[in-house]
Image (cartoon, rainbow, N blue to C red; front, side, top):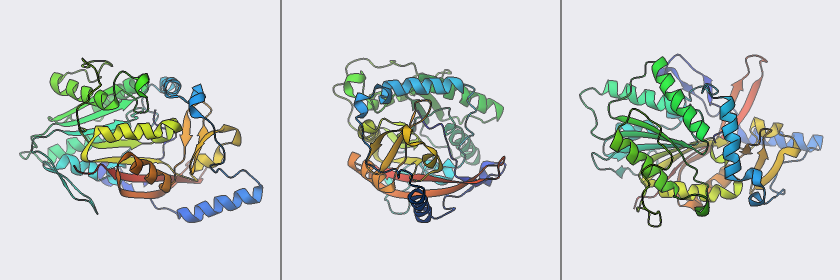
Length: 378
């Protein structure tokens, strides 16, 4: 899982993390949308709306199990783990990530939220769903290491845990190898109170398709890392799962959930299930950092009508040539999806970014939806 057409939101990148210049408003979304609509009307092309529908559940190619195999094939073809560059913009785009790891007793409420009290020695857990090749994990690990170097003598007592999961076993293994390779290559020191682990899981699966809830999968992965503190970072699927899952523990354990270019790859009819599982896994006061494709993004404009296989309200859905799903969100549909699952909206906007093609000299217009959502404090 995770998109195979990443846009990084960077107009200029310097040599190190401190040199990253992050841009997310290079052009007007409203003007761009109007230009696209006018061009479609002039050419007589089909305007992607919600008037095309199909039953996802009756199309085996769109079901989660089939999509997992498609992503396995994709990641097998890019098993070196260097298909994506590390997403160094993430901590600039989502400052709450580093704030979460920096503070012992609070998660910063941001511009309009209240801080959520934390027990002093409570473990800080960040979960990335749809880890792909691990390009989101590297900058987080690196900056946690840099934070620890700057705070010598003031080390926190809590464990910092980064969990990364994907529905594709090949992606999980690629992420594990990629992280180890990059840490060795860039001499990134693993913080002494920092743990990293990967595991296979899919929040979109129904109860009859999985023996355990996603919440249980996450807790098992976390418990495995903490109790074993092993050198081997990959969590075997099915480990530490004794007993039935009919009465899962109340409440989630994850403080930050990272969902970057993953919801667009989920079977449209399973998105609500996906977000409900994420909600259960998130702790009260915890947050979801969300970034995904927006309406009128460049790839959406290039899809031929024949690749339009399904739809969701206000969100055109296509299938790429290799069989993966591509959905393009509106801020309205994103808000409705997350709030229907129980989250409250902290931030939500379109990010408009120019990507420069050095070979052709073209300036490409990318549109993403940026959001931060919070599970209300109990």
